[in-house]
Image (cartoon, rainbow, N blue to C red; front, side):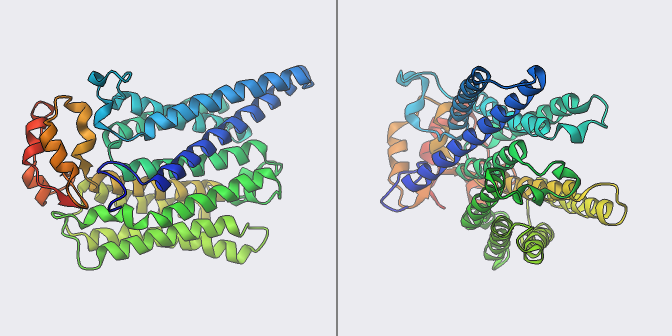
Length: 407
């Protein structure tokens, strides 16, 4: 990044990749929406003519446009020029970014439940109640997390990676010709040899590849002072994250109907690597943030419980176990980033419009460095000693006092 970017600005290639991923997410959700609309229209009027199809396509285009706008808002970086006083339009506050992010996740969840509506028929209230509960709960959680962590570029990038996988699966669920796939396993979505299977497998390949590529970046936060990372902790954790990513990509490259044994090797490899990651990280990082410790323990307990309920007790299907395992991986990694990565002070300009320009210029000139605030989980690191508490009203003065820290 030396010589190519300023503090708080992502490289052009990364930004292009983010925009491509966000476009794919919006397109996938729109595809799911139009498929469901056409299905419901056909059931209601016993036929789908050109007028109905055109109306559904127009509505899907509107959905895609709105979601793409929401994704751009939620994933946008923070630039000092974006202050309200600059006269360049309304500022993107933390609340607005969180609402945009929660809206996308809620839409994905609601459409996913609708695509597999028959699976929720035995539950009280059926798919309607399930969609409201799942979408509402996911929106509340992702909105709260995004409001806290949206200033962290690693989080914003990985949030889009998680959305890409979810949206690809959603598109496949809405178009699949495999029938009641949820009674078999989640990988059945990749076996139909059509566009639906391509969406599922491509989503796994892209998200898994992105996870592997981001492995070092995701694990880099624990190297900061105060966490007590042991020698080799960052490379070990990065390697396990990369293994999970490669394994997920392998699941997409080798559908279960192509080579069941190799497909299962990739799937089990991802699960085993995550179990090692969640269990070894507290050992490798002596003063790990409490939230991450609790998340690690809860993740291990949930994964083991889901496996026992599926394999030994037969209370849940393989599909449920796979969904739980997938979700735990992304929840744990997002928790890792949120609790260990610092916030670049340069990106907090929206909290204090009256920034000392000279101090800001000195920060911009720091070679390969950035003034940071340690996250809540940091304990006694150099940045936390330099700025243990920085209130919005004192932000401008703190800019001049903080020492750039190499990232």
